[in-house]
Length: 487
Image 1 (cartoon, one colour):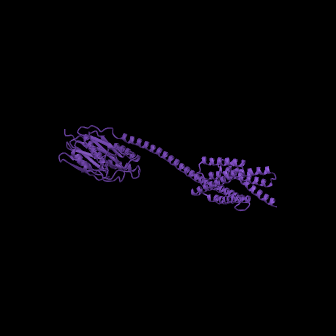
Image 2: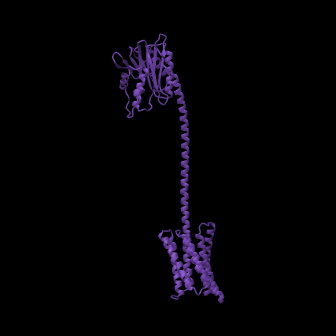
Image 3: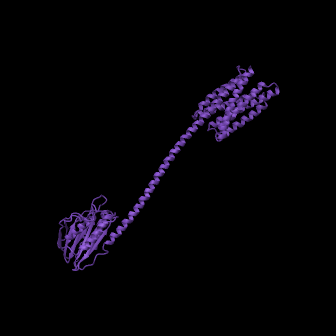
C-alpha cells in the first residue's frame, strides 16, 4: 500500500515536472534569445531526475544500487539549486554575467565532490544548499528593490521552497519528524509553479508591450506617411506656383518691354525749348506714359498719362492711349482730343480702368495746357520768382466722355519752367508712411530754376531718393520739365 501510494505520488509529480521541462525547452528552441526558458527547463529537468532517483532508491534491494541512486540524488539536489540560482540571475537583469557563471561553476564542482563523498561531506552539501538558498533570497530581494514586475509571484514560491528546505534539514538532523520526500516535492513543486507563472506572465507582458509598441509604430508610420503625402502635395503646389509665377513674371517682363518700347527713345531737340523727361517704373508693368508729337508749324504737343494700377491691363490702356494720341493730335484741339481718347478707352470695356492725362501744346512762348485727373502742373515764373500750381479739374479718361475739360494758356518767358508729373512722386512714402506731397517739390523746383531741365529732374530725383530712403517706388514716377532758355 505504501509503495503503491508513493509510486502514484512520484509519477504524478514526475509528469508535472516533465510537462514544465518540455514546454519551456520548446519555448527556448523556438526563441533561443530567451535563455530563461532554458534555465527553467534544466531546473525542472533536474527535479525530475531527483524524483526518479529517489523513487529508484525506494525500490533498490542491493547496497551498491542504493548507494548509486543516493549519490545521483544528492548530486542533482545541488545541481537543481545551481540552475534555480542561474534562472534568478537571468530574471534579475542587473546581475553581472561573470559572477553568475562563477556561481554555476562553484556549484557544479561541489556537486561533483559530494557525488564521490556523499556521507563524509554531508555537512558541505547542507552548507552549499544553505548558501544557494541565501543567494536565491538575495536575488529576490534585489528584484523587490528594483521594483521588478511580478517578483512577488516568485517570492511566494520561494517562501514555500525555503520552508521546505529548512524543514528537510531539521528532519535530517532529527530535530523534527516527517517525510522529507513529500516536503521537498511540495516546496519544489510550488517553486516550479510560481516560476512558470512568472515566466508566462512576463512573456504576456512583453507581448502586450510589444503590441503597444507595434501599434505606436504603426500610428507613427501612418502619421509619417500622411505628413509625407502632405509635404509632397505642398511641394507640388509650390512647384506649380513657382512655375505660374515664372510664367507671369515672363509675361510681365514682355509687357514691360512692350510698354517701354512704346515710349520715345529720346525727347526732341527744338529751338527755343529745353526739354527733359524721366520715368522710374515700379516692379510690375506700369501705367505711366509720356509722348510727344511735332507739328509742321514748329509747335510740339507733349503728353503725359497715368493709367489706373499696374499690370497687363494698364499696359494695354497705355498702348491704346498712344494710338489715339498719334491719330488725333494733328486733327483736333486739346479738349476734343481728351474727349475722343476717353470715348475710345471707355469702349474697350476694361472694368474700373481709367487714365489720367496731361496735354501741353507749345508754340513759341505760348503753352496751352489741359489736365484730366492728374496732379497739378508746377509753373515757375522768372519775373515773379514764384511757383504756381496749375490746377484744372477733370475726370480721368475712360469715364464720362462729355465732361467739359478746361484749358489754360501760359505766356512763358526766358527762365520760366514748367513741370509735369504723375502722382507717383507726390504719393511717395517715407519710412513713417508719410507722403511727400507737393510743397517739398515746389521748394526743390524753386531752388533749381537756374539749372537745365535735366539737372532740375536730377534734383527732384535726389529729393525722392532721400525721402523714400532708397527704397523702390510703389508707383511709377514720371517727370517732364520744359524750360525756356534765357539765351
